[in-house]
Amino acid sequence: MTSLFSLSPRALRDLLLAFFRPTNIDDTSRPVQRLPPAYSRTPRLPLELVLCIMEDASDGEGFEHAALLRQCALVCRDWSLPAQKLLFRTVHLVTEDACASFLSAVHPRTAAGRVLGESVTQLRVVLDYNQPKGLSETSFAHAVCACPNLLSLDLSVYGSTFPGKESTGVADVLRVRRSSPSFEEKTLECLKAGPRIRAFQLSNWSENHESVLRLFEVWPELISLALSGSTPTDAPGCWPPSQLRELRMNFQASPSIDFVQWLLQDSVLDVLELTRDVSPEVMDFLLDTQGQTLHSLALPACSTAVQVQTVQRCPDLRSLRTDQPRAAAVLFKPGYFPSGLRRIALALDHDGTFLQPLLDVVRLRRGELRGITLRMWNGAERNPHLSALKLVCAYHGIELEMIRDARVFRAAMRNGFDATDAWNRASLDH
Image (tube, rainbow, N blue to C red; front, side, top):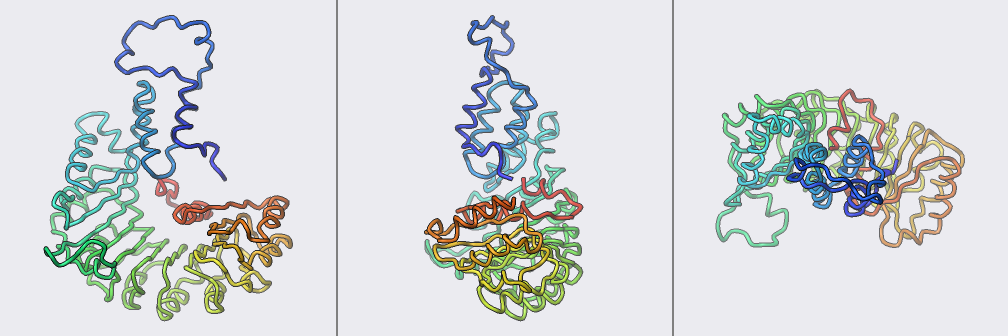
């Protein structure tokens, strides 16, 4: 469902301040002055409603959302702590200075520090060994341990280069050849004493796979895992997560079958997301071992007979997404369209021919389709079947969402997936 407060941060701030008289924190101890008659009649929103508005406005990413919350924190004392808690829900750390400021703010010696530390549920960290003031692995471990309620960790690792060996603008294939030091044992022990995260997103842009993947031993009970960057070629010597339910892969090249077999040896997946094509051998293994249990599947494209067969080998699908336009029309024909599919996300350009058979799916009420999400490529508005799709979706009560941004498109599909997981998906998204 589209958010009620889908306004820009500036417009939302103006809406909030229209109902509240901004009060400088330093002035709250002064005697209350009688307001002019016209100003005293200004309606005042209940604080609970204001907090709901701030929380809804904090959904999403970008500097504008953070700027809005910082301004809300300065309005009055009643707003200050709730706004700060929302600000600290997702924390980004790249440098030593930023980490030192963060650790000072969440130090448990003060009540405010304990509250802010407990508010952090998602941590995004960059370990760049090529930067002179980059975050150290020791500070990274201390930051993780300072967040007792941490659920999700997004870690990017960049290796170091020798002077004169690399220039600005080199291709990704050269960037992944950087080396990075191995994690020290004391760092791993410190992380083991910290929170038990459930979602881990690892972008490894170095050649050191063995050390980075040892982090799986720190958090063996991971439920959601996203891997990107350089491609592991062999199965590492450590133990993989044993309870994975979600796996997302976006490697520069297809991972080896040995690595995938090692990674999923003890896991049963509900969600599989492939941003890039994998080798036929890896795809066959994934479908043979996980296809019967998959509820959500994302593929780079679904325009060939082989890719349509991939969808058919997942009989329990409730959610399907493809990132490239021109999906195969046969996918929507009787006998091919998954009967239990509830949400489908497709990319659309100006001549996407799949819309006509998709119209038939909606008109004839095939399956359990409840929502359609379209990623609008250039010229998609000129598609001759788009207007008809809008009308038939409105008539049959099927939600139709049109999005341009690729990241928003993917996130919308993840949020729309009706999972039966026992873990708190909403907390991971924040």
